[in-house]
Length: 96
Image (tube, rainbow, N blue to C red):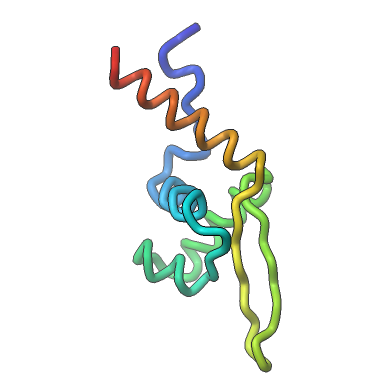
């Protein structure tokens, strides 16, 4: 087995890595807060959250606060497992 076999390609991008890192330590985070924390544009964040949602690594919850739409994201069990495996692979790589 190669050193980088368990490194997940989906987490190669710094924004997706950031999204996953934030969601690992927070139950749910809304779109605006993620955007502020990562300092990215709406479109950029939307495309990366879509990629993670398609992989079933994050779950999306859309509600309304008054008349304003509110989108919250949370990490799935599958997402936690994949991210932990990715971090473990990086740690093993560093130790080599």
